[in-house]
Image 1 (cartoon, rainbow, N blue to C red):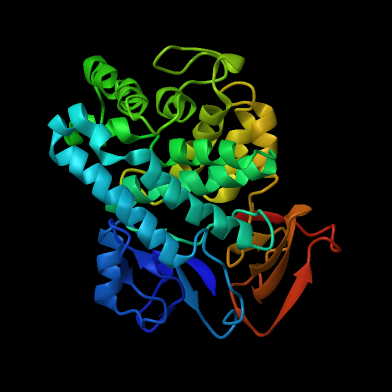
Image 2: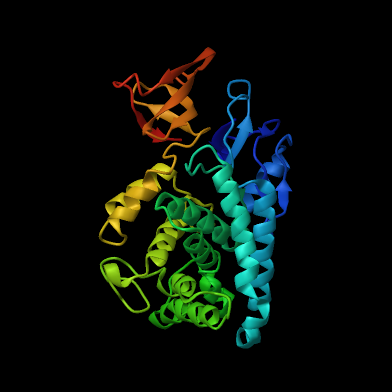
Length: 360
């Protein structure tokens, strides 16, 4: 399989990765032959990239961030919780009846088991989600990324579950903010921005009143928009004043937001998102956590189409955790834009004069 921009997709292409709807259900299954109406509908739903199977890359497999069954179950639970709270703001006063702690511990246990079942702790991005499902899938993605960072830090199981529950529910306060406000694509007035910022405090209050959600988990909601240099909100605290769980969630939140399909802006590649986070180390985010996180992210995930400094175009066939910028690349096109009759692979760990200049 290989990843390509939806503008390059054509009728007859075979979809290689499931596309998920807002509630976690599969909207379009892998193996489906794309048609012009399908492509148009996906574009309207905010999908910017697709994974397709072709004769050059049919044997290349990009594993999803999460097993599709686990993703479906996790997103369904997040969807049910959040939409209930969105639809009935009064539920905030009796949110304790949701028994969130136990329910979300169960969800996170499945996420954690799936992460542990993988051969390594590398985060490979290949899940495709429609834009109107971002809010629900984002929580699951943030929890998955947080699990990888927590495991890399050597957290005990108790710590992992506190972090995981906090990561799944970090944005719960958004359910108490008018939808029109947090879905706004344009300019916000200072009053509107102040109201939006209140989701952190509202989320904290909702979670700390849960008898089975730890205070540490609740701080993920309160502090995920705080920044290392004190430029964040709601309290403008700095560095070590932030709970480490919230620091981890903040990194996962920004990385997933940048690399996800959104209606109002372009979808960034993992490489671009990694560059942003690196530049923000010890300014917006804890640099030690950034370094740890980036050591477990596939900067050029399997199936990514890349341009080399030689002008050749290829598809990442394999990534090496110890050499994140030097994957195995299958060359499929020459510098003149012509497809090769006989694609071949180049190991960038051995060809040090060849580099990736950008992901397509």
